[in-house]
Structures are given as C-alpha cells and as structure tokens.
Image 1 (cartoon, rainbow, N blue to C red):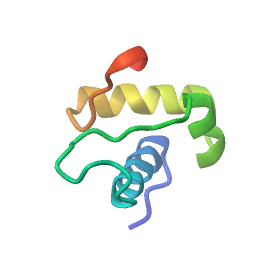
Image 2 (cartoon, helix red, strand yellow):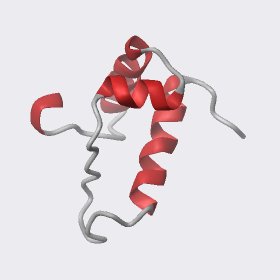
Image 3 (spheres, helix red, strand yellow):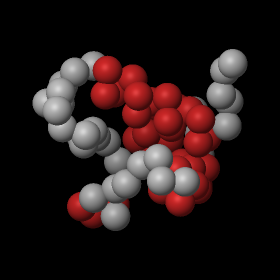
Length: 70
C-alpha cells in the first residue's frame, strides 16, 4: 500500500534515509542535513503539512527530534 499523506511520506523518507547507511548502524539517530522546508519541497508537500506530520509522528512515539527541532 502506498502512503500518500504527509505523515506517511515523511516516515518513508526517514526509512529510506536510514537505509542509505550514512549514519552508524548501531545509532538510532537519523541525521538530516535539511530544513523542514527542504524536506517539504523534496516530498512535494507544504511546510505546514510536514510540520503537522512531524508532530503526529512524535505523538505516536515513532520519531523523536533532538536539537533545534525538538
């Protein structure tokens, strides 16, 4: 099944980023050298949609943000 909502697209983006293997394998962190607006543009979503999606995924316990996007 293809996820077309912003939360689904963001989750798949994070999974694909993790699979690239650019971070240490034992590290559960996924480093994103992109802003939310960059991610929104990349995924074809609005900044507001990505912000709502990050909030939704955080409340669901799927992701946790550290640093300046906490």
